[in-house]
View 1 (cartoon, rainbow, N blue to C red):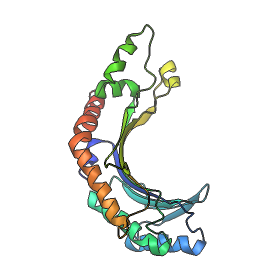
View 2 (view 1 turned 180 degrees about the vertical axis):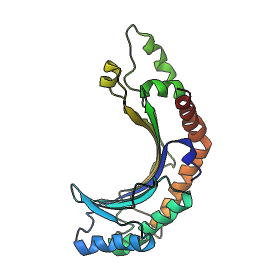
View 3 (view 1 turned 135 degrees about the vertical axis):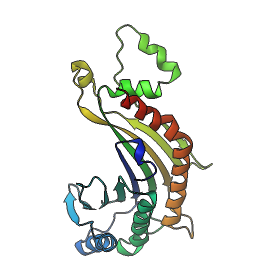
View 4 (view 1 turned 30 degrees about the horizontal axis):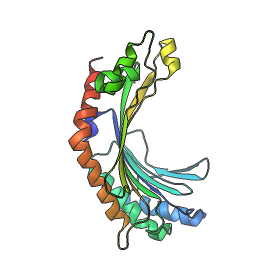
Length: 247
């Protein structure tokens, strides 16, 4: 289990590269890209297409941990669900970024944004907004609004978005996503659903001269790990984990 896997029911690490230009869509080109991944990871043998021209290669999901990769018209994604270590995810993502200049003709100029994301899912049967308020609180300026007669909380999904450099090209977003709707609150019927916590570090624009996608992703990964270790684990993951455990 990776260093973050103990904090939630499911943990995953994703990398998304959004391009300015349309990616090649020919059969031979796409198959060549996915074949390069399969050579390194032979267990990635499930290949299929989704709507709108999205192609997927992934491992079997039954073991509870699996790799996956997708190619869309202007996006390349790679992820690992419940990885045994962060190094495993790094190796996989570096392989994708190393291969795309040759397999998909992606230039360092052709970068709209490059994203590195940590995701955490907590399974909880109950009102997600209430458990999030209990674990994380609300913005102090809003707290007294819930004292209004008849008020019932129907949304509490805290998020913060901030830049990591002076020109705002590198940004970080930490957010929490609930699956509880007004219908669930009205009926009092709460299915077992996932509360998700996301940390995404994103770099916008073309790469600098001499800069590679692997170097850029490593910088994003470093920021993500530092923010996780310094803030997110103790301030969000652990309180949420404890609040769910005692219910």
